Image 1 (cartoon, one colour):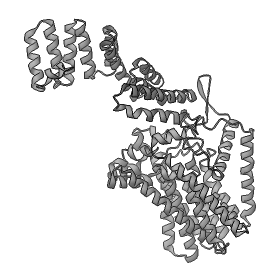
Image 2 (cartoon, helix red, strand yellow):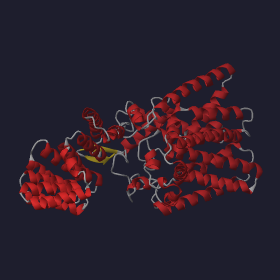
Image 3 (tube, helix red, strand yellow):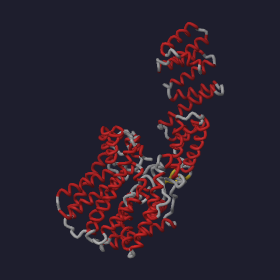
Image 4 (cartoon, helix red, strand yellow):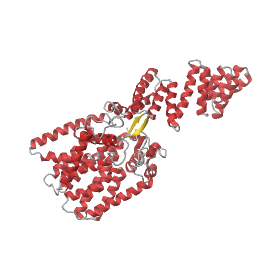
Length: 601
């Protein structure tokens, strides 16, 4: 889905190792958007170079071989699961020696099979989440080693591991607090805690300095006016207005409750929670109040059990700290929620779930419960993976769940059009384009200012040869975004093809000339347009104008045999046989088969 952003359409990654300097010195999305400013459509920008460097190295070795990228993703996730077991066991063993191994094992097992992690593993872009958690836990592990051994080399590994985690994704920064809190709760030896804190702090300072130097120091940025990058907008009286405080907080509370539901009952799953999949929710609505009460309860339990040094308290903190960063409470993250956003927080859920399972006194019940969860989660994870076969499968699957998302309707409409580039069957083209128009129209209904959807709907009309409607879509985009190069280019081509159709199909020569002239105003170097205009003038017996247009075509491409042949026909029709023979000879010098090609048309 997002692999194009970080791999297949990222110009820096596709350069291989030679693109690494650009990856390290620019916004993570710059290689995809390719223009200054577009990479900062999401407030604050993004600086996550580590996984892009990894992708560039893989691309250098294997090109866009999807198998190797997915293999690395799966192996990375497997390594993370092993590290979760190792780190959790080492962390809680001093306080819970009798159950440490069992709790750590079940925690790792739950994390490995939880269906909500499918997106991060199946979507290559999810490597940033995997690496951020992996290196954060690796820093945690070396911190526990340092507490035991006090060896200075461990501090180096703490620093490097945590720095790698931060360069994977910014939310790793929560482990600056989670690591010392974990040591405070579970370790019997606190000596060296402040040294660890200083090491983690130094890594944070270095990361923030590098990030700020490259992206600027305004971390929160300015909220976007585009709904797809700022979900806290509502369409009122033909314009977008920001949510009220009550609406914003209520909607955030609703999404936070949704996260808990998906961790306990991971169904239905979708990659798309863009507007208006999550409905605007007032703060005093039932869903919001219920969610707020749950989170206040979690916060109460975390504080209550903190000084009792309970695994329950730490599990809640493992859940809440990372979630706070992506909750939209601190700064906008570009969408209301996403299953990938809960990846790091889900470790806290898995840990507390494992702890409660181990507390069950009946061994038989305990085993049955673990097996039941294993079966249910595994089935869901297995079946969910099929949706990630390719973009079309993913979009057509998830649109059944995300029925009110403008983004997925736009995405499915766009991906539906892709095969039409090489399709020749008129019936298939018309049927496919009609389906795409249906999806894109729904996207526009949900988001009236969705200019990408208007542009794609223009493309759908273009494939149907409904050039008038195509031009209307492109014009709408340009009315609001005059610098949209793609809409401008597509409208120019649509005018040209509409002129061609008016002349060749309907015999409307004057209408054809009008559209062709509009096309030429937009692109004065379109040789095909000059050729068509020359033909239209020739049919109208305006031989001088026809000759002028063919000569302009030759100015653009002096090696155009067809332009010379058209001049031959025009001079012949005007009665200038000498000039006609001269033009025919020039055409044959370039292409000896030019007469045969034209007689076959």
